Picture 1 (tube, rainbow, N blue to C red):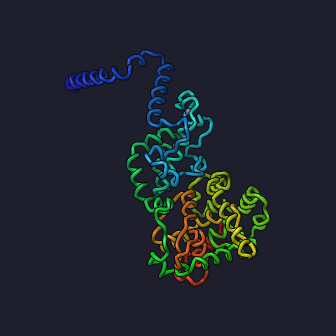
Picture 2: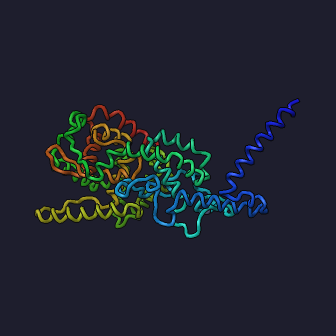
Length: 409
Ligand SMILES: [Zn+2]
């Protein structure tokens, strides 16, 4: 009945298949593999897989990163660089299985890593994940993590999936981050006077550079006097004390104190930091931001010299660790971020901490055309938002304060 019709079809398919095989046999000796015993067949497949991956990601013996793979030029990479993106960037369960090859997360007999491979496929995969994060807000990223669930245990499979959209991702970043690259590469300088919304909605945008600077110094001297925990304060205007933070001689003690107070845990439960591994924010205080740190410390030294030369007492500017705490607090402060992005029309959203740090350190022109670092303007906006004279921001702040009380106490 069905058989007579099926047979000719099947043989026709077989013919087509044979033709296809003959074609590919000339390139890959597939028939040889078939004759091999099971184990060697397996290792041959692994070998082919290795070769294929090597062709796709050729620079794994050097310090390459996924931006290079996507086709960015080195001057762009300098500013888009993914500092501090490591395994802790990945949420729990994503590329974090134990007992498998560390480089590719496959069983050892199926490992596709090359000997002396410096950059593992897993590390390229978490960078690829960071790149996808760059293009999404918190909700979209959450959804994305769910969508890639089949790859949570398979960074190599994820990389292949990622590679297919290579060109699309490249042009999306070029589009979404054009403003960021222009500003961080100092091709463009932000003038606050160009922001209509800022001029109308905030007094900070009408202040001179000197006034903004003084607001910044004042904010820090208040924090120092009251021994307020810096990260928590910039995160939600909470003025909880953290004495150890102000008395600590080195960063490790500060980080331990923050941990003891549950700051990192609160951050994870309240903000998008929960989309990363539990150690992620804490480890930002390590050696990740060395380049930025030395730049900051250089400017700190210059500032102290200026102050001394002017005969004044040296301003007590924060050292690196509280400074970084401030920027991290501001980064995860959603109300503040929305306000700043609304007021300062020349900037848009960035979703990775290293980009936020880089951005905060550009100089902007205040209303009197003098230059101040963007982070000073940020603190002035943060202060204005925390005070009672911003009617449209007030309700949100109260909500945020309430939720922090629930979690914290
Ligand atoms: Zn491996």
